Image (cartoon, rainbow, N blue to C red; front, side, top):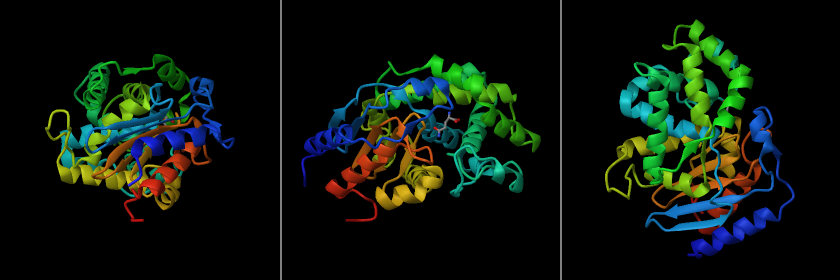
Length: 309
Ligand code: GLN
């Protein structure tokens, strides 16, 4: 078995030397300011050993990766009732697509496209003030990562709040079908803020450990979720975590993964490791280009794909 530390360092060096980086997201103006040359990789294995390379300790905007954690919270609060509000099928459409909502009467195809994540945010907001829910999401991430310093980048949240017309359209459209319980502004405010949580690869890989370890948090020994639920969240990450690039990600990397337009990807090697990678340049589907390339190299060298080899 190749040495994990060495493989991670090698891949970080190889990625920093590459010229093909993709384009940094610019539709959220604040994200366009990020250094396109940054690259970070962190892997936490089943024994808790962390292998890190490149800019693994630089915080970045986790964006849609937050949707894994809001889904986890929603399942904890509402169990299978969550599936009355969102489906769990891949959409085959871009992350911000509206087309399917008309056909399915305001029920988004899955919790990881924007419409689905906004519906999940609306669900966990009910009965609470936006600030309370946001605090709960943030504390959940701090707890999972074992790091109370994790915070929200207010400049990114404000930037998206000013320009998030497409998300406002999705939320209003769902509201028109009567499937949103809270004022649209409240739901969107919480959504934009949880997308604006900033974390480093190391923090994110730590936060994902429970998904690699059958729901257990090794720091406390307690279950964050039941093993079956962790398995199911992984399944949705595999099928829906990269939007209309999910098939390509499964084909090349072979792990459950969730991307964000900040250039991060959280990938889970069940039973083996939680992995976070960050490179801000995106491909046409809005997924980190070098993040995917790095994960493909990692799973190949370590034999970690869930599909074998
Ligand atoms: N906050 C971003 C948006 O709603 C999240 C999208 C993403 O990361 N794919 O557009």
